[in-house]
Length: 272
Length: 322
Image (cartoon, rainbow over all chains, first blue to last red; front, side, top):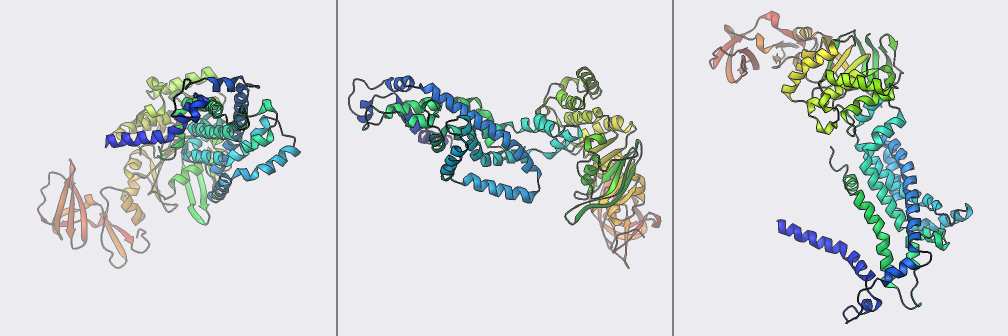
């Protein structure tokens, strides 16, 4: 039994990690080694790909920084709006909440790419182009449905007696949120924040169309713009190096908040 | 200080949870709201606390109409069934939070919490979180929070139901000492008739959102006003004889006596309870429960009788006493 489980875990790990390992392998390989993986090479391993990415102008760190700014902006804005929305929805009558949930599910499932031309028009008429923080608006709006749904179930799972006890103790609405409810939904908030951050980190079409100045690009767009030595060669190694560098901050974030995320995602599975 | 409920009604849609409820609890009195689950006792408690609004009627605390007053201004000391301690705060912070919000200075706050912790013998646990406490300790913290509220009314919602039997017995004197010695009215919600009889001066038996009967434990036991109260109060349960010409006769198990002139019966089995024994008996009037001293030897075939003045009579159709 135990051996079967270990085997299964190994297979699953290989299955999910293989693309990542391949990416790392590619990022350290010379162009020749990539084209002829089985051939004999004098120079199989190289740091050139990283050198190319990091010494480009503007430097890679600039894009990383841009993406962090946009990510923090969107995550902050989303939570700022989603927490009060979720709290209110946890208080309204069952019928209203059910309708709202249905609509939110619809919005969460809607393919947002269909919106991006309309969003581009909006950006043009409101003069939001080439503004990093302005990207947070569509990102927060697109993340809202999922964030509200996740936080709503977290609020629902809190025993109502806790808030009632706080009311009897004299805590007003804001104090109850600040001292009791928001701390208690911490795990759900952490996992929601990560999901929003991830979406903003990976988002491509809106970032591509809203930002045109080279020093304001976010990571995905910047990576796509890495140029090869000629039009006919694709710089696989440089792409891979940029992708690995771009994934590092997220990896760090997930490592730090690992426990909160896991407990947040499984919250509601078991009523405590 | 007293608590008065006048013609209280609360409905959800067209369904009345409680209706036409009148209640008066005087200074220092403990009143138990007793009834099966869904009878409206918890709703009544929430209405008094202000956590829910009645659709009709008025509530007075210490002579003041508080029907539209917010929960905090009613000054309620409440112990919830789940204790509702804030899980992310230490015992000290749990107790201090309310004082802080109500504008009590840091040093005063610290002193008041410390004295309540000492009173409840919780000093060593001040830095623990609720998850690190036993059930009895949590209950004491919840009580301490209610005491610190300096309330006009105490509301206890099944405060013992999460504790084991031994602990309940140990905590009852403490609860009585801490709360019932005060001048505040106390409402004690429970579905356990034994606990209601042990703790309360008076018991209000509730059924389907109405008070079926209100009185001292003795009154309810000896003079139940309905079949429902008669069978709800007293364990082992009262014996109900089959209806005869629209009348149901009821007789308590301890009032059955062995007698050669009685009705013929057969002993099915006995439960030995220490000082007494409970006998399950089959008779021509249906099954009977009899409680008697454990020394008495009971043969398999016996004759039982009871004196007519120990008999309760109820109308078979309405369940009311007649």
